[in-house]
Length: 102
Image (cartoon, rainbow, N blue to C red; front, side):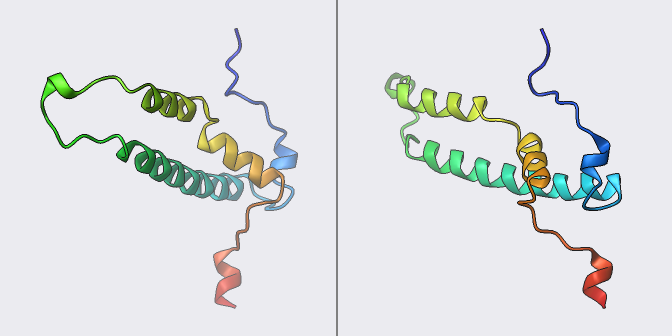
């Protein structure tokens, strides 16, 4: 069975905007970090609602809603995949440092 998170990409398509595969990877990786941070914050906020201030093991129980929220986030596509899709669709804004200096 093939891994669904592995996708073959056309390098010509990846470099059409940047003219440099390394710059494409840097832009996509920075966007992936942003996505990852946002998703992690959302998940933490949702799970914080279920946080218990009681340390008594007898009062800690499985919460179906909490489990479903966690499973939803586990099934989401990886941030790197989401970032690369956004880059290829032209949804990522970036600028080169040399252009900023001018």
